[in-house]
Image (cartoon, rainbow, N blue to C red; front, side, top):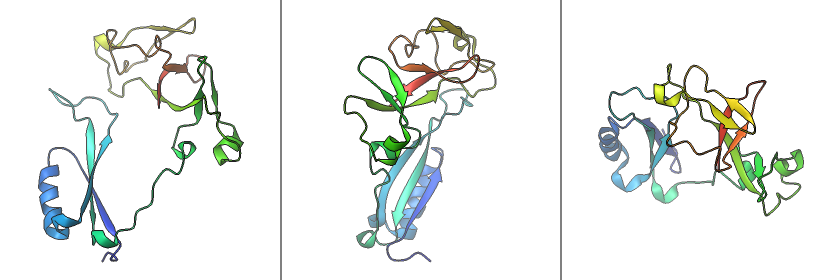
Length: 177
């Protein structure tokens, strides 16, 4: 029921992606395979060994020669959540409304970024992930779940890749971008 320019996306975990790809090759033809897209997950570890860190999107066209494609990001300010600017001197600020709308250029020396929560979503953090972090003359705790990293791998605050956000006891967030 797809138009000639249509396409199909199938999301699947790593356990069966090879089987689904074989099935999609039979349905659409391997020549109409467009892309294998990795979607990183942020959920906690649920495996006894290495946790699954990604899901996958298989993209197939009905007819790859007629496929319509539009770029999802027209400019850096269109990226969802990338609404903060970091300047070479280490200072940060949010985009102005005019910068978000594209009416005013973002300063060329600034780097666009988005804060990302660095507390884990697992129900109980491991002993190695629950520790205080000193940042901007304050001490932060991860709460009941722990940080996404342990002491030996944590360097976000020391490397100017963290910002404090939130209420009275804001979480530390890692700068991504």
